[in-house]
Image 1: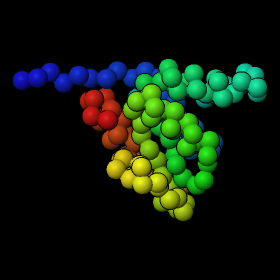
Image 2: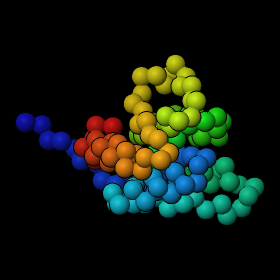
Image 3: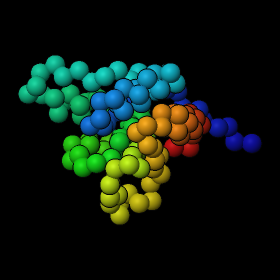
Length: 134
């Protein structure tokens, strides 16, 4: 019987233009043992460099693709280029068109008002991540 490799939590980055969603996801990641502190912009001129370094050092990236946020799409593309495990969120209440390149990916749909549904879906995805199946 082959041993199952368990992934240990490390650093996680949350990409979203919605500050309240970022905080909800960050708290849940922290409860699962991840270092998911809010990104600190130390120098406004180097915010992109700081963010890209955070993604490089992350063991997991959670991206909210709701709405039209070119920044989140760019950051997700960078994470994918580095082959970082990702959890993709999409708000059912937003009119979000998913590009065909990502149609085969697993998305966690959520509703803004349904905090429990998001937590349950994210808990399941984090368990799959820990079991090496993400």
